[in-house]
Length: 243
Ligand code: SAH
Image 1 (cartoon, helix red, strand yellow):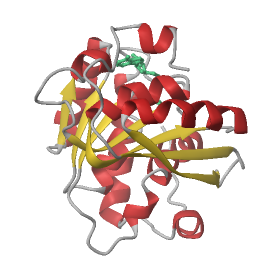
Image 2 (cartoon, rainbow, N blue to C red):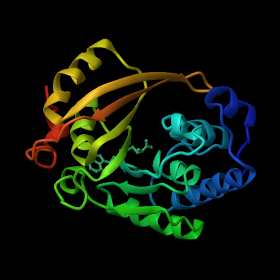
Image 3 (cartoon, rainbow, N blue to C red):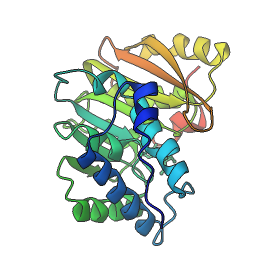
């Protein structure tokens, strides 16, 4: 297996940040661990060093770029909803060792393999929630308990909003990692956010540094309590997103 490229200049020019040498080594160990886990269960199809760098490492971190460059980034309690192979949560856990990252995924087996990989990596700021978001969000210890929710490739934007907002504390934020973004999607999202206690804060766009792909980060803010009826029963937010 070829080593990961460093691309310090690309980190700098796109995110005004670059990993330390120690962090680069940790990213390399993460790459090795994820590829090894991928032999046991299908976690990702993104496996070449360049693809892994751009579509997993860089992409995971571009969503939290504003915190990367803060001199004194606050200690946040973060949930990665639908983490799959650990993205964006694991690169975020490596870049922010003082944050606590909960990886949430309905596929118990994926999380068990990630848990073993994190043990090998000695990652101690990561925890695991092997359940559906709709269930976790109704458990008193987790409801309105997170400062930041991250969601990449988990479904339609209104489905993501219904998963994320009940888990956020007042003042918390969600970063929805999207590819293309349209005025229709934005209008549809704006229409439902008040019912969930959310507000659209910002839409940031980015171009991926190696292949010039389109990325949008949709930032939601939690501005009032989410009514107890949300999220609806397991399966409903995906099957019939709020309109
Ligand atoms: N975020 C990862 C994986 C995306 S695949 C990435 O970007 O690479 C989507 C993942 O979300 C799957 O692993 C699936 O099990 C999980 N998922 C989908 N709906 C979910 C729900 N309601 N609750 C918990 N996990 C969910």
